[in-house]
Length: 217
Image 1 (cartoon, rainbow, N blue to C red):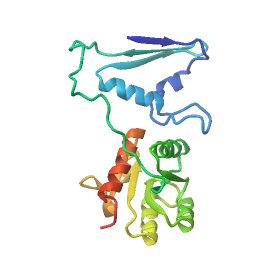
Image 2 (image 1 turned 90 degrees about the horizontal axis):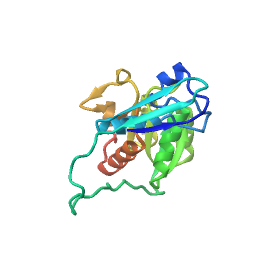
Image 3 (image 1 turned 180 degrees about the vertical axis):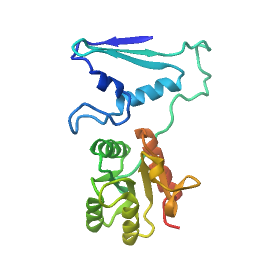
Image 4 (image 1 turned 180 degrees about the horizontal axis):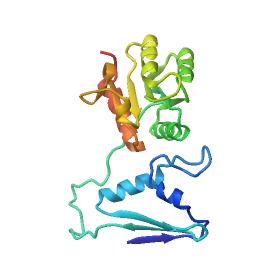
């Protein structure tokens, strides 16, 4: 058990109830993505442990992380690797990220710039179309499905007019808003469900670019 406490302003019951909710944040715009606690909770649960938060306004916060005790051998076999090679990109690979939620778009863009991709950001379908009109080197579209105005599926159709072979990766938080066919969305477009981690996004982007999935059939 690891217990960490502070003497800060604490958390209200409403905030405490949503603390582990993906993309929820009390920070100002451009200051946080709301994924930190959600990822910690996910990682700890995968080990069989749990995370608990105790807080009241004006009385600080205590976070407890409980992990199962390891009773195995002290040393790993010499042929066991502890790290997995992260997928990498190139600045010549240009990805257009489209999402009307600022924090999700920011996290996605940062997650793809880190491995080396060139990333363009758009907060709407209209902004995405503007990028397509100005840039002929866009190599992939990563778009939310549910957006005001031009939605992701309409944007995908319009993008095909610019480049019929453009790889497209959809994302959506609510499966009821999409139509699935064996894990795929209409016209061979691949789906990455929300919430997703930066690592999951990077893996899926690399997979789509290398495999040719997400192209019109």
